Image (cartoon, rainbow, N blue to C red; front, side, top):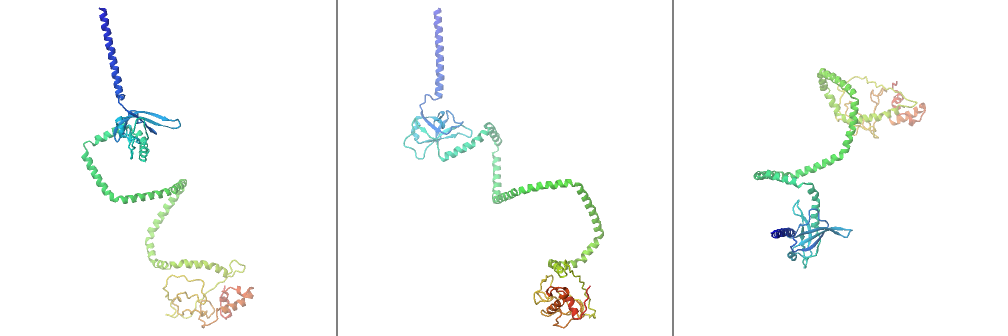
Length: 448
């Protein structure tokens, strides 16, 4: 009895052990099948600069979008001085006949945020030999591959900064917001297209305005230092105004009082001022007409001052003091003959101070002055008459051709007067003949 029970118990234990062994073999077999340990593969190696974080064991190996294997391992290889990434690729043996030996590889992402996979690139001129187990596949070094890798490297910091879960939530919210509103969105896009179509003809003007704005901005940028300096200088002015505010207040008070007094004056004398303006209009018109002559006149007056100082000995020990009185002619007034006239209507002009040789000063370049005189001036070459009574500016005329006030008479008077003055004849003032000439001719000259 006990023996049968013992045998039954041993049988149960054996069956339990067999069950455990079968379960263990099932799990081992399942894991081996998952790892494709029973799948025949051809192992090749891919050498690349780097694999990246998105490429790991089990990543797909594709050629023209068809999966031909997977990444069996990712490891670091090198001789110590230089290192690189070595990827062991497990390829399907039946696909090796479709892959040339000179194939290359790229590491591309499946999606924007997805893992990478190995993309085998077929060459333009395939080699006659096919890829075999144990071969080494190089990394694609073409310009297109380099540019693509650079783009991916530049986008990587952006992808790392963008949180996929938040981006997914945002895209889901946008999708929910647009759900059922396709017609409205289409209508909005149509209107937007119309707006852009209407804006398109104005694009050259907008471009010109933007270019002009750039020029203006450049001008302001160049003027900015001067503008800032002006603002800095303005602070000094503002500080001065603050320091002198009491004086300014007093000044404003005085200006207010003066303004009040001026307003009272204008209110009382407004009619007189208007009348003065009306009556002075004719005088102002004449002054305005001859305004071009004033600069020349004032300049000649200013230039005559040194000559007058020189003529009268100003600043020397022998300074002359001469007073000349012009006595009016007391002859009978003849109506129509002695009536003052002004016939010269030529307007403002400037006569030269230095008279050309052989021309009498009262003859300007454009002819004698039409002053309305009843006795016209003598033509050039004749001496002007002097007053019969010897007084400058009045009297009857002397006969034409007289030697009075001629160069010969001036030289004679200078020779006679020089010994009295203690000088030479050429140093005698030229105006002495006007004073002494009438005396030698028996006329009367009054000098004070």
